[in-house]
Length: 367
Ligand SMILES: *Cc1c(COP(=O)(O)O)cnc(C)c1O
Image (cartoon, rainbow, N blue to C red; front, side, top):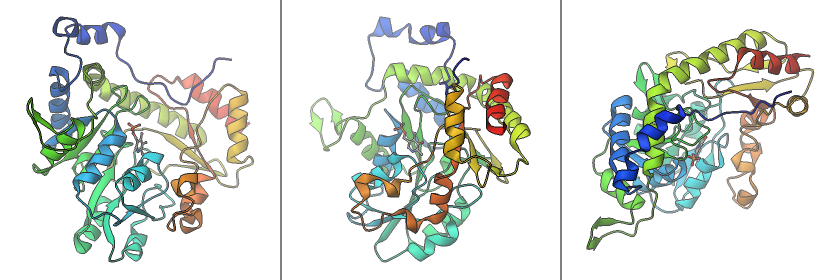
């Protein structure tokens, strides 16, 4: 049997990419904010309907720098969720801030906004919520809380590129939203990421941090790092962006087929479709709750059949070894997140996944 991987990166036709990078052999301009970098930033600003997109070499550095741009006092508390990729919590901690873990909703696995205010203390400085699987957080309630308590909000929107709420892009909420354009994401630049923001005053800081604080040949005015996106990455982005609509439509039809096969099955819980949200169909998570097999058993059955599914997100970030001495860590503080993390499996999903393959996957799960 042919193997089915959990994902398969979107790529343009070979010739299309070659055409896009051909002129790099004339210019020899491979990185340092070249023409393709500029063009991709502009196209993304247009696509997302936002004033500023700052490209980065990956989503994690975009997030670290977006949090840094909030200029928060060291040791300040940041309310976030543990049902996420390592990057979110690491970005908070690497900024000298303390993650305070809020539980998630049963239905869409985003931050449970009814529990946020209980976690606010006089040390709370920001909220870093995570959009999950192509679903979005309750952005209106988060905005209300942030406004009431004077908190900054940076969304980890790595899963929510091209997702809209009431027709508005996910890029437009909070002080900033960051995207990851990693190879496994709905839209990829091989490795890549971006900070989306509206505050003009952030531009210099975000730019300095990705280019050593170099203002011009003779003036280095800030102790910045290096996080530039190369021309080859930007070229992949330009190609992939032109096919994004088709890719999302194909993902949608894969998801619809999964739903047909798996909805209404006793013990299998599917992701709830959110009102007013146009999803990007980034992932297809299935939660096994009192199903005839446990999540781990299904995972193994699938592997035995050459199919890789992913325990995603598991473990929770507040269970990581590296946080075991943190007073705010511990999965018992976020029981819903722990419940889901122990039972969830994201099934293979990519634009070109065939109906036959979806059937093969569902047959294994249901047999
Ligand atoms: C992928 C991802 C990131 C990190 O993005 P990279 O581009 O891999 O650095 C951050 N947060 C979440 C939720 C992600 O899924």
